[in-house]
Length: 438
Image 1 (cartoon, rainbow, N blue to C red):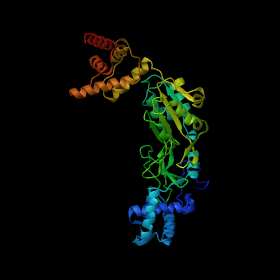
Image 2: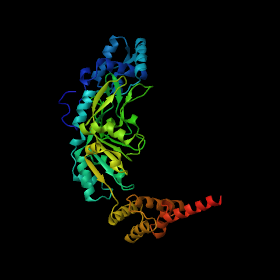
Image 3: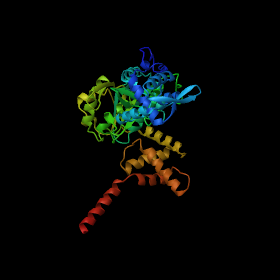
């Protein structure tokens, strides 16, 4: 890839017109083309190029070499383009190659080209302003100070630790961070390292734009996507942070942080994963500080990749019990979310009532707040308005009528949702009596 290719992330990447332009060894591309042709059965050169995301010029080069080596042959012409199949020798060679790796997708990009483009698209270079923050968080009720602190953290492009009591809106804020970015980036289908394929593009993670460059005019080994958003919670394991080799297909899948490059990685409920917090923090103490990570192929080859992502840690646990001072110093931004004041709580309730077509009034909001304090001894958690409105809507749907926000529906919803201290005490007393009588 020429040094002048990426002047900015928004530039179109020109299609390579020769094999050297791809940045990948000719023999590697020939092997991939042969496997693809064998698996597909019979293809025109254009169809082969579309499957490999390589221009017709490059595929024609590969075809001429394979034809000379008697690995493929021409079966006819379609609109002036050769239609080809593998020869018997080509079939034998393809089967040998498939034993080594069953990958037959788009041609990979080189590690060098991947690193260069990731650096050019760094989250630290994103053009973020107050308007972007307010637009992204318009659906949440947050005070100006919280918005300012989130905005400052995102502009830093480093990481953020969001903590506080449960139900305080930490996950909602974390999930919204990726929506802040107004731009898009290039994501490759796969990367080649030491003749090994690492599949990076993930349809469940990467959101391609509707408008993509045309095959043949641009390097379609790269997909134009929104900045990545990777969300992981308690299911996180140590294996998910390293290259994963499929024992059957024999190619690698990229770890979470590589898929999140140039975007956001959210670790929700931090401290409750299937990996100890200290192990995760030790694994990432260098990447968070130096913005580089190290991955290892089977066989021991270690290589460096960019760690160009914005990491969001969200937890309701005490941060100082999860990480030592050295690690917390590397997380440059920390935001504690407490309980909102009554006016903010009422606004959350009002918005949720509007969303579900329930009539809202301050009097009913005050009744709800008093009920939380007097009967259930609960603080004003931001999650309660939506949860209680859901209870009201569900009950109304079950009974076959329109939902109504009134004192009776609030009472019933709270009884369904909360365990009152008085009821809990009665249950304990009843249980204790039963045990003694037994």
